[in-house]
Image (cartoon, rainbow, N blue to C red; front, side):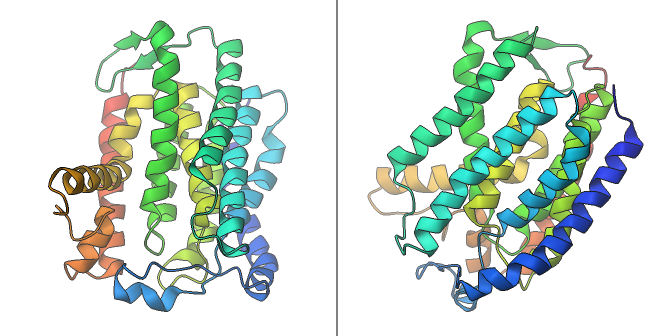
Length: 325
């Protein structure tokens, strides 16, 4: 490895400080431009007072991620590739947010446009993996003690499904103040430690992102002064899918990203049951965090509970990664 744990710590601090500075520089302009969040009328009534809160805040922690990562880009293509996939998904989210907030088109990018853009970015990243990895298709099995599966050609469809699924899962999780940013701090810290354990230098950029998100969380926690928007959530999903594919830890998302999984399954179950029963619902509202709100749970309590769950699953992930290589 080129870097050691000290570099990762410095990177996290750099990302944290840069995010705070950038927030104080950019937030006034986001407010001045009236780039405010539009709240769903059919959502929890407690969210109505959030209407107008500045969004597209993902620009802030992505900028601090870029600044904090510059010192680690030398001769490391994996780090550069991770920055590419993260920032590219961030750009897609930014365009989507811009259309929603500035152009006042509620649905943002059309589904076809999103699919084309995400497929293009994902294909470029996959081409990088194919070109540089000597063991592409190898996926480590959690708790496997050296076990892995070689998917061979099947890895290509698996990769696309994993990438799209992860990106959209993180996007669904971004529905409460600090929920997506706080849980993802823990997830990126976990994959940072995992990369360090596997002797891969991408641990430094994972910790830079963790530090950047920690800085962002200061302003994103309840009551949020700013939201990350699709700019941030799509970028975070792209990063998580990207780093797991480099480390061959794709299946570990199901463990440490259990909150993402729950949120996604709740939407799938809700939509599927609604169609099958012609109007009946399993949950009061999906994703699951909204169901809990409508059941009477306080927003802060839900977020704290999901933090605790993610932290515990990261500990389970630590046990799962032992002796995989």
